[in-house]
Length: 90
Image (cartoon, rainbow, N blue to C red):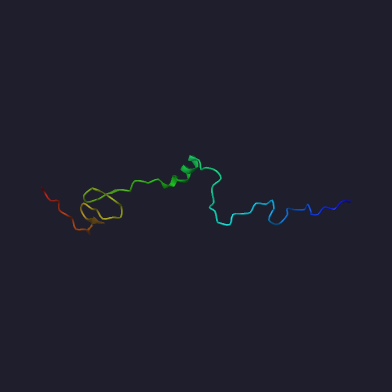
């Protein structure tokens, strides 16, 4: 029987090995597939803006934000809390 000079159990180790070496610098992760428009829009569906909630002032009936003082008459919960600026007549 003829004996071979190397074993066939695995690749050789050394300079001329058949395995590719990994790059030594770090690389960034890259997605395998492009994100479809439907998937992108589904992901961003909760980012839509909504109109601010408005209430009416019980004193002057102007629109105001709830739980805030009215900018036109300066009242909050029936009390005067802001100084009212008088409009200059021209």
